[in-house]
Amino acid sequence: MIEVMLLRHGKAKKSSDGHDFDRPLKERGKRGAQRTGAWLAQTGNLPARVICSPARRARESAEKCVKAMGATVERIENDDRLYCASASSLFDRLIEAASQTSPVMLVGHNPGLEQLARQLLPESVCNQYDTLMPAGTLLRLALPETQAFPLDGGAALLERITPDELPDGFPWPAPDGRERRERPAYYYTQSAAIPYRIQSGEVEVLLITSSSGRYWVLPKGIVEPGLSPQASAAKEAREEAGIEGNVQEQALGQYRQAKWGAHCDIQVYPMQVTRELPDKEWEETHRERRWLPLKQACSFLKNPDLADIVRTLPEHLQGTNP
Image (spheres, rainbow, N blue to C red):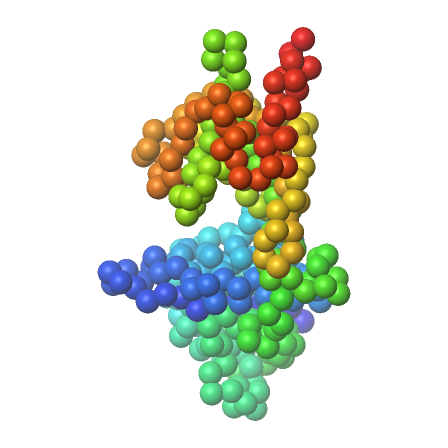
């Protein structure tokens, strides 16, 4: 028998401009995909390969699910053939992939996935559900080792999971801790960059406005599976502040911040800025960025623990550049 998984994308927003391909997930869809990924990690039923429709809602579902599993998004392969695919086309792609690696997960859309599942599974199983694959549903199937389609009910249903059946919270620590938190475990490990430059012998720090525009902050974000804290800090600096540079290997310090019903541990890394991106390359141009003398930058930061870390930057730089 060959084990495979079918995952229908989560709840998505309606298109305002008629472009179905670019529809994003609703928050409910994101959380559902993450709960499914956490469940896969907790039960040990991890796909070795994930093949995904290139439509935005499918890609977002795959990414949220895979990260919550504790895997990297490099496991995901976007395949144009999965968008609006027929049941027979989906089956051909499934068998092609499963012959190389198992288990394989296909992430796609109805009606193709629903039609495929109903042709693979016994009628007695399918008749238990008005809709076999509502949004966000995961099916684990065991297929006989044959390439003939349809299988005429020759597959076995190992499990059918819908997001609504899974707990709202996420296990902490992952994958099977007893505590439940509002977000997947990896959300609570973060890293931040202190973007700096030397002007006339003085250290200057680049601050950006928060997403709400109410505060001045440093670029920071979640350390995603597969990324080092340093690489994550560089990624956030590029996206949030529109800058590139050299992130040092050694953290300058660590602080905690209350969020999502618990606290995040945030490692802080000095980053010497080598380039400011033009607006056309900067993802978050709604933010404002400003170079400030170090002392003034510290006074602008809301978190006193973070400000204390930033104050040590000149001494640290002297120690690394004798």
